[in-house]
Length: 344
Ligand SMILES: [Zn+2]
Ligand SMILES: [Zn+2]
Image (cartoon, rainbow, N blue to C red; front, side, top):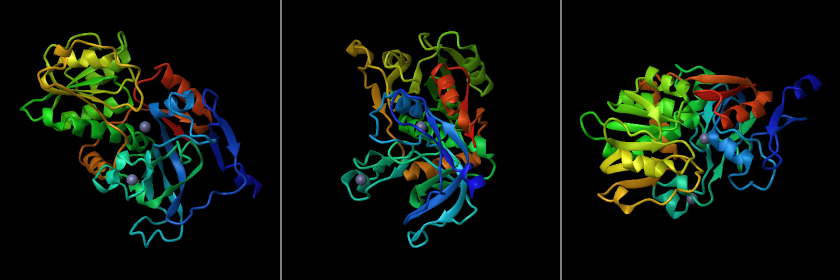
């Protein structure tokens, strides 16, 4: 039906450095074996989308629809979904994250590191994502969302919240004291959620932003940070751990100088500019630098359970789906605080 055709569309990336194009689809996408078809109700805009669109990450080789913070409702089940032990039903609200498929057989998959599977396929990168009216996903990699969150609020949970959660757990060993001090470098979509999780778990939060970013610093303080300042500033107390969400390599030596011996610096982004050289003394005394890559399905379950117990305030900045290019440009320029969300 012609009227319906207008409602089936995607914002597609044809190549790096080019604006996304709105493509109308003739027919509804089909859920294949083990897949679900989802009508998108909100899709978050993640910094990784920007890295893909700008060509910081290798182009997947064919046109792709970005978006891996997808919230929607199941409208059709492919064959074999029920047999795969998947409980999703038509009408259920689900989220589709970055991790879209893994081989299930390699050493990484079999040792609890499916996030590092060499053959993993990612939503909005090798698999069409949620900058669209509809998306098809492998039923085993989508999960339910706590009912307390509206669709737009839930979208940033799917990556900003999840990757933030994994980064926080990565720093866990350094956060076992009585009132652990956690630094967050880059106070955007992920950090504003992690700040609340960390507070909920008893940490004092220190927020580091671009110099003069009064809006981000004000948001951090409003969400309970004990201190907010510029990344170049030394915090008033040494930190136990620091999570880096800004894609700026120069933050690594800064964060190392802000943590105590045996403290941990976690780099949470998928892409970062080069890390400048620094004196070994800044790393010595068992300070650690680690990176976080992708997520596992266990992270998804752990994080959604935490998000249900600790009702996160999600600061969203909404855009119509057709204005995905504007949302990406605003993210690139740092023109809003919180998380951008596209609404079909
Ligand atoms: Zn694998
Ligand atoms: Zn992401």
